[in-house]
Image (cartoon, rainbow over all chains, first blue to last red; front, side, top):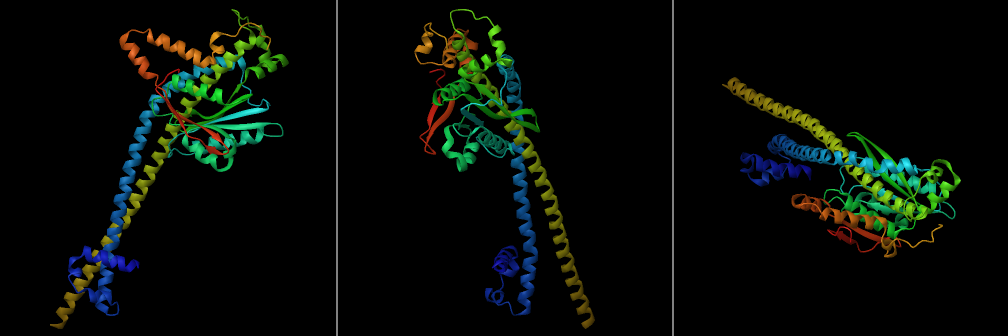
Length: 326
Length: 70
């Protein structure tokens, strides 16, 4: 089969062969046909390699372009992610971060990207979310998932589709902004019941380092309960409350606002990590394409030279045979 | 909760603090002078699609788009 394809290609390549009667090529028994087959095959293999080189070169162009795009997007989103860190830091100073808190109803908010080709960032958040699920599930305890982004949805759908309550996609269509994320946070708050929200995302450290991170947002009731026990949250009572609001109301407002702020930061950090991961993934794939291209060029030149050498030998030996016959 | 005082009017209307603060923020944005106002309003565009899940299946997604602080 392959030989037939080669021969057909060879005919197109070498019109001198194609001009010969097809019947001769079809019968592989005669010696002259075999020679033709070999000849065709020899030049054909360079043709195949040449096509392969062309496609590798095109792929390399694409990956290079993707890397450039990711780099420029990264620069835009990185500044905003770093600025948004100021939003959650006061909350952590005030309410603390309690990743190990033991509550009945946990909701894991998994943040991922809509598009692929960005390394392992989506699979790490999914892994962490699953670990959180295992840690927090148990008798009389419930864990549910809220999934942001197409990729984590596709992975989580396979094994935990019964625990998903909400999924959100197309978040990245406009540049990320607070209004958008807060509407999203609002929708999540309205649709799930929780004692603790655990937001899983990739925190951006540098272009090559992303830490899968969990931020915990507690519900006001849990904060109140914890503050009665004491510890970090016990200091809440030392704050004076102005106006006619009670501690419970203040805590509820705070928890809601904390969630939207933490979400905002998490979404930005995740977008930032996505771009960084895509950049390094595309960088290594264009490097790989370059290596492959080098190897292919070497093979191509080697075959070409070999065929030239053989032809030369054929011509010379033919000429000397004629000379000897004279 | 030891609250006996009336809840704030916006919470009585079924809003969360986030919605309330968004409406306030939007009011402030509308108070800006013209070149800044248009810029601030175009910056805060909302677009995402949200789908609820039931029985392990996604239901029809709801598109939330270009409606800051409904």
